Image 1 (cartoon, rainbow, N blue to C red):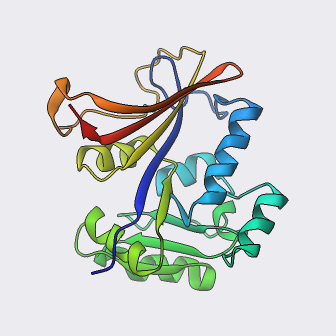
Image 2 (cartoon, rainbow, N blue to C red):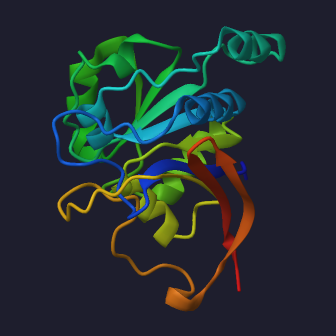
Length: 226
């Protein structure tokens, strides 16, 4: 049986746990040094995943920006860019988004009822695969493992982070905490309400705590709980 990828959740939040505020413009939480750290983590990954909602809201290119890091990937016998993956149950995607037109290969993970819709929308911009009648994260990770993905970086949004954490599928969490407060209940949060493994008293192992200018990076091992 093909091994599933090592799943790393990556997020930047405010001190009160928000990924963004409710303004039309994206809230810049990280600083330049932390963005460079994220670029390094991307370069070390075989695939980068975001949800369709995040793609529609932020319209990211989701690239490894450093030429040196891309050159090292090629020298190591890897593709210049990691595989870019998105997940959608509705199939509501636009072919105009930056995601499709920058970087290397793209993959859409969807459900049976949306496969043809996504293929008709995207054409040859991406490979499209269904994981069954409903979104099944186990089957999605199995599919990525079959495609040679050993290390998967997940960059949101909050719904996907919540699903992977609550199903015990995250191997590592990188949480960059910015010295900001959002305080808007309707804004997007890193994690939502869920039945998390071990309940509210299960303490995750801390792998690292590091200041990156005015941002604090905390690395957790969520499967190691006491």
